[in-house]
Image (cartoon, rainbow, N blue to C red; front, top):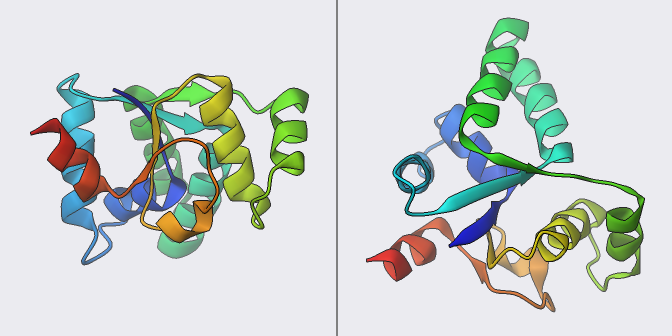
Length: 137
């Protein structure tokens, strides 16, 4: 299954955020074991760098976070077409709209997020990490 992983799930794992880290790590284990094909948007990578650097106060840790993410995940391009689709969407949060537009553009099967309510009206399944893992069993 090809899925877009929301920024919050990546950060849950990288920053070991409780109580979410366990489900995030289980998702990334499924990706490592080729049970799931994971994608992030290009903008997610810039957000990860900024947030990890800010929270850890370490540019080295931020660079490591990007390296780990790039080693594991495919990257969905954010180009003009994606941005126009996002802008025209019915989502109220533009960042979420960009993620949805990327998922649609790359023909992904679902978006994995803790913020399922942020994607109301999306035209593809929006699942929590736990819901995806249950579907894989």
